[in-house]
Length: 213
Image (cartoon, rainbow, N blue to C red; front, side, top):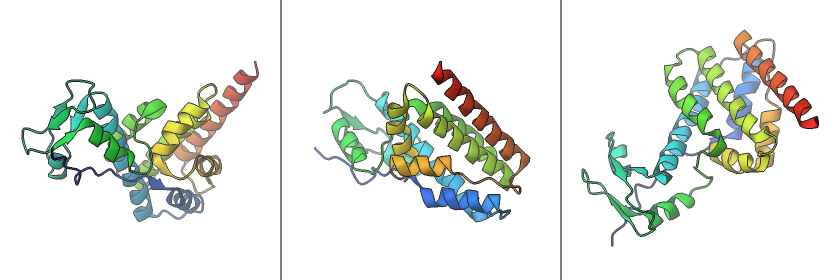
């Protein structure tokens, strides 16, 4: 049976050094339009891959070949059998479900949305509508902090780390947490960005107090 593995491509995770550089530049008053686009679009594409795979696990598989050609074809899984053959009626692309999973697992980083699903879905809706540097930076920062919230949430910390950190950013759990805990903000940061940062700090403090009770 022929499995079309060549099209099994996923958008990569975003490099931590780019996140660090973006925040350091912003805090210092350097509004790098190219860098904010590189980070913002990189996060967008990775979120698309995460949600594509998550929906596939739920039973709705996007035809990879059609997607590469700018078309959309959804292949509905009919069973839970690993040898189920998925075949696109539009282009003929086909793959067994077990091969689909095996090829996906070969990529570095997990793709299931897990606890951070709402944050990924919101970013997919919001970021494409952002035009200015400040708007893009605010959307990126919101995703980062929603993601950070999942990493820091009491009671489900390990599970959240295993899904969210492996999904979005290219680094170990320790490296991801160090970057997120040390994001740079300065007097040049936009008021909205600073307010978002303070809201995060307040929520974090409340969670700590609740955890002590």
